[in-house]
Image 1: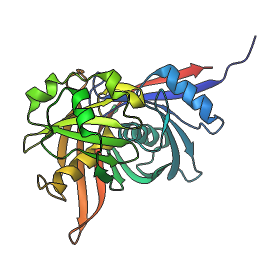
Image 2: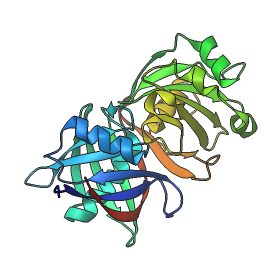
Image 3: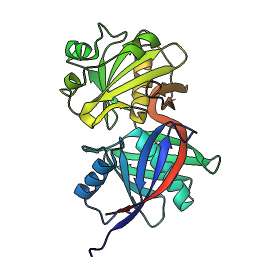
Image 4: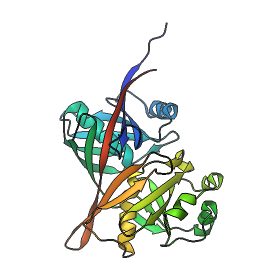
Amino acid sequence: MRSHLNLEYGVFNAFTHSPISGNPVAVFHESEQLSASFMQSIASQLQLSETTFLQTSHDKKNVEVRIFTPVNELPFAGHPLMGTAAAYARKYNVNDFVFHTKKGSASVSVKHISDDVSEVEMSVPLATSQPFSEKEKLLKALGLERSELPIEIYDAGARHVLVSVSDKSVLHQIKPNHSALEAFENMAINCFCWDGDSIENRMFSPAYGVKEDAGTGSVVWPIVQHLIQYGQFSVDKKLRILQGTQLRRQCEMYGEIKSDQGTETHAILSGDVYYFSDCKARI
């Protein structure tokens, strides 16, 4: 009889205080012995939008994180790091630490507000942006005639194309051609509406193995940057972004662009995380 490798992991729902909403991530601790191909196989088997694997330093204040979708590794992503932060803080009883990813480092602060719910705040670098060159092809794949703001692509570790629509009615009626969207490699397509108070977003990404995502943390600060760039919002002000309503898994995310003497310096991503379950894999 062959022996099994027993791996403990947890599932944490990002951007919610409820067990049956939000965007889940599977978090594997102390994964130093796992190869990248093995991590990818586990993520493919679990079929969550992301699975994370941690390597912890002796001081517990610096953590290396690797992030896998069912089809590829990501250098950085928002919701999996939010869920991973809550998981790590609970396991090691630390509240302030630094995540090190293939895209760079992010400072994290965690506050537990109940046995199940944690508040997580993460400081991240600003995203870079450029005009998107395939606008007409993209609008056709989405079934849209136009975007309210210029269509641009932002790189926040994951790459996000931003398309703005006039209102929630238009947003909810979008039925994208997923086969056509597969042609847009290594990027996620985000359609959002802005009512002057908050944002609702929908994210489609066959390229990342996710037809529609419930809550995409790494698009939060690109959306805030986009609104600021076109005079729709201000720095040093928190913006509420909802996602996943069409999937009945609503996520509530918050983003803010910080500034120093008028210069944008970094972004803050924040939200609640729900401790859903502890699990064990026998491989």
